[in-house]
Image 1 (cartoon, helix red, strand yellow):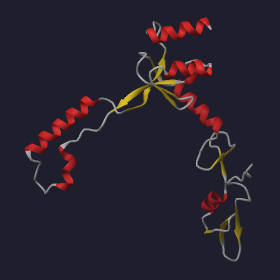
Image 2: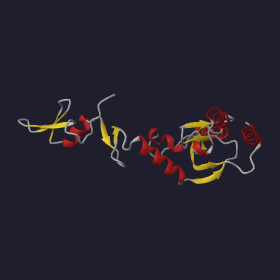
Image 3: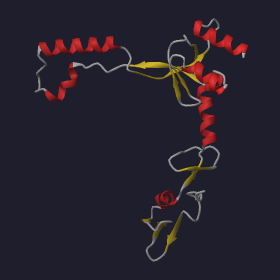
Image 4: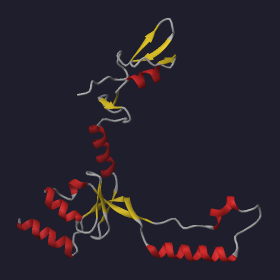
Length: 193
C-alpha cells in the first residue's frame, strides 16, 4: 500500500533555511508559497466533510461522495417511468436501454430503488444558425439565399434525425403502478422465483 502523507503533515513539506522558502518532500523549492509546497508534497488531502484522507484531485472521500450522491438523488423530483425511455443508474454509473434494466435486476438480484434510477433526456445535434458564419463574413454582409435555404434544409434534417444520445435528466424514476407489458412480465417472473 502506498504511504499516505496529508498536506498538513510535516513530511509533506519542510521549510529550509539559507534559501528561505518552502521545499516539498521531493526537494522542489516554492519560496514563500507554503500552500503549493504542501500540495505538491502531499499524496492525499483531508476530506472537506469528515477530514479523512482522500487522494489529491478529490475534495471528498469515497464515503462522503456516496452520501452526497444519495442526498442529491433523494432531493430530485420524482416522475413515473414510461417503460421505454432510457434510464441512468446513479448508483452504478450505468445506462439502461430496452431490456437492460430487467436483465441487470435479475443478474445482480437488486431492486430498481437500489439503483437510484434517473429518467434520461435526449441529446440532439445542434442546429446551425446564420450567425455560425459571423466571423467569416465581411462586415454588414449576409449569407446568400442559397446557403440560407441549405441551412434550413439541414436544420430540418437534424430535427427529423431524432436524439443522438441520452443524458441523465432532472427526474428520479419511479416504477409505474400499472406497468406496461415488459414490466409486468418481469415483476410476475420475480414473484414466481
